[in-house]
Length: 100
Image (cartoon, rainbow, N blue to C red; front, side, top):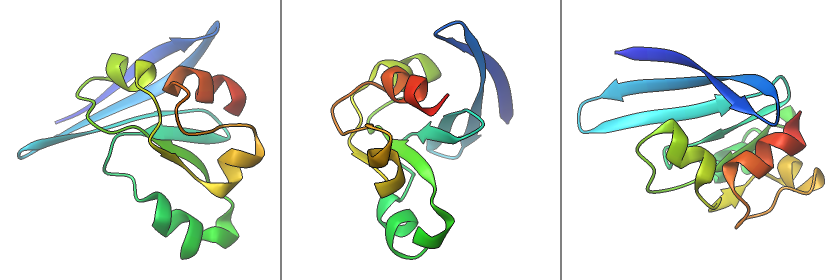
């Protein structure tokens, strides 16, 4: 089951996606520039193998809902996200505001 949900961040409407899979749920919230995602995101892959794409993304682990993804501290971020001032420890919502 795939669910698309509008997510409000700083007065902006973003796209939240929830994908229910056996024994796990994938979560992401995106802007036009980048996205935050649950622990399934492989930040190392984005930095090392796909670095030329300059992907702006961040990962939070241990989240089970879109609301938790927004509130959770980020565990890791891509090199391109760091260039925007997005760092591990900030919340998903704070990161999304910098991606707008």
